[in-house]
Image (cartoon, rainbow, N blue to C red; front, side, top):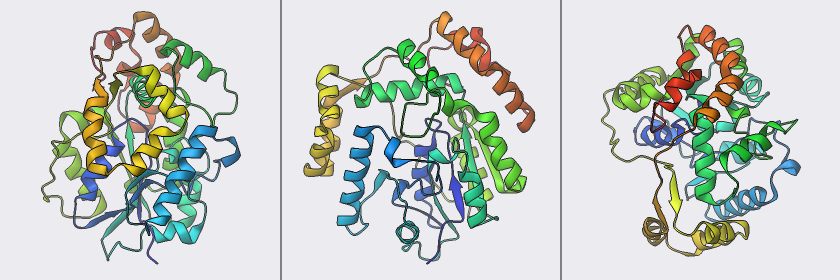
Length: 324
């Protein structure tokens, strides 16, 4: 069976879900119905996954298998090679065949594993200011009800983790340490096989960046894509305590499974309200800038692009929303 020839590897909360859906609409592009199968991140230890996360992953994958691989799934942990290849059996001769597992960017082994599978694979990396990326991930976790503490407490707990791993803890800080993550791909793959997108560029001119990705993948870059819809947006549950109760007891997934998709999406509009503008205090901005400064400077060197404004506290606190 035909396998993938391109990989959108992250970063999490940097626009990958939107890009996944835009790419999926192109007739010459096929993307796995499981957006994030995570097959090549072999450093994921299923025994170390957060219990509630592992429960949801197992339940979602069971539902996907029962459907005959005919439903769309956001995330799973596929470990069997034949099952992984089966995700692409309906690619129908498309030129560009891919998947989008954001665990592949922080993974210490995914770049090597992908290279061993296909040394000519195309790699797409999306990068966002790591401070706003961390805050966006935290806000999403609050929306989902998987965390109850404030942002400062979440970061302190995150920094205490000695051996971070995808799915075992939140990784707010670790997921944004891009320098070593990007370096692994640049060391393994030819530079012409790696396309790096900056989130700010993508937000400000999605049409231009999408055409650049189409060209990179060798498909028709003039294909019109509907880009009015945005995906994976933060929101605020109307009753946070009830939201956490549903999440922690697995009831959210049960409701999603038994309620028709159209009805479920309609109910979500009443369940969540629009989140407040994302803001950080000066103390938070200075603390996080100190954590990321050296890493961002290294990344700037790799990319030959000055990104040091990412770790300028004045520029952080001057923004009401995460746009960089």
